[in-house]
Amino acid sequence: MSIDVNNESGTEVDEQAILDIARHALARMRIHPLSELSVIVVDAGAMEQLHIQWMDLPGPTDVMSFPMDELRPPAKDEEETPQGLLGDIVLCPEVALKQGKEAETEHSMDEELQLLTVHGVLHLLGYDHEEPDEKAEMFGLQAAIVDGWRAENGLTGPSPAPTVS
Image (cartoon, rainbow, N blue to C red):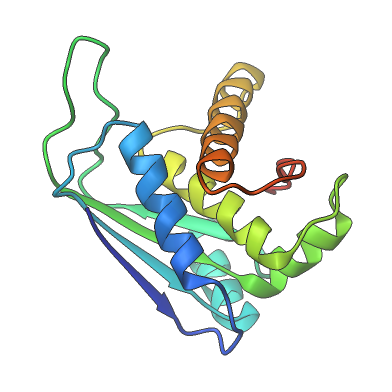
């Protein structure tokens, strides 16, 4: 799995954890191991520009996903997807910090960025949360992936609850 994490935000983030949880999520979703993903961490100003340009919405947001080859998880009878370019995930630590502090179970900016990374991966794979049934499926899968990664890494305590806007 080729995953690049590029921090352009000026904020110190746990890039290794972002890389590790993205790799875990893609493996869990049975994405071809030669697929490529880019994660870019930007400041609030850059995220606001992207949010306006692509969503026509004001202010910065927490995570945005830009799919390339529109890869989808394989059906149960398939081994894995063909290899390809998954696309880009853009994260904003300033928004993540705020959301972590305001969450039902308060958590760190890095924990929020981990959750947002999984959220972004799922969006790249075609998941959405516009409709209640889609939201239940996506957020359930997101929680299972984050919980699985945390368990594998010996992290204790409650996983961050979904705070994605």
